[in-house]
Length: 74
Image 1 (cartoon, rainbow, N blue to C red):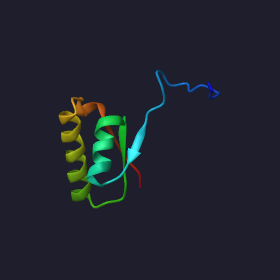
Image 2: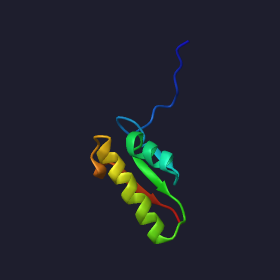
Image 3: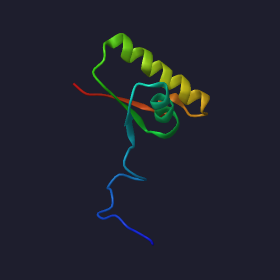
């Protein structure tokens, strides 16, 4: 059965998909499927390590690592 969602997003071609997570599986999902990573409240060294892992995984997946944004929340 077809379905629609209204109203349509203003952003084109679609709204950004942001994912969160710190496990290796979550990092792979972010790197392969998301527009960005929602970073949590970890110590800076841990955030840096996870971010580097996500960027490396994006490259392995054939994506430009710069296409994956990091979003920090405080």
